[in-house]
Length: 246
Image (cartoon, rainbow, N blue to C red):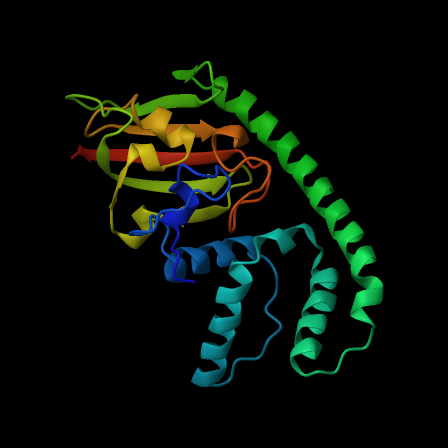
């Protein structure tokens, strides 16, 4: 919970699937995960009564925990209810089944659900990339990144190791916003050698004061593993304003 959401963009050099920054977060846990949860559950009728401030605080605790369990998004709402029932009854030492007996079945079922969800996400991403490349003014790089300048900037572009100050909004191809410094009203600074490859490449095409739309294929983002609210094989769309090269 201490690793905030720059975790979603910032990467270490050791492991491409666990490239997290130890410093300031680009995607703040308390705010961005909450907004991501609201986006993912938009249209689902609330079923938990929250009559008191304490109940709302406890609900927020659960929401924070849930927002960190992005792998479970491959499950249907009724399946999630069963999973949460198992969590609750494990905490209360009141299990209804022999967990060891069903461990392999659970792993097999969950893997199948994940694979189906990833395949669906990959197909949607491929369609989004084709559509983005067809937009007027868009260019596709050799890596597959789709770059579209929205507002021209001026001055020197950043290098792959520059530190930049930006405003941005990130969303999935279905329009779900998973993070937004714009909504928070607070720009962020980070090194371009410490972010996902799509950002490193795309920001080097910008100039200070410029705005651009980056449509990033999953292999330039979080690949087969996903991260937090970002599913496996997700194509990501970012609206980015480059405020300054520091």
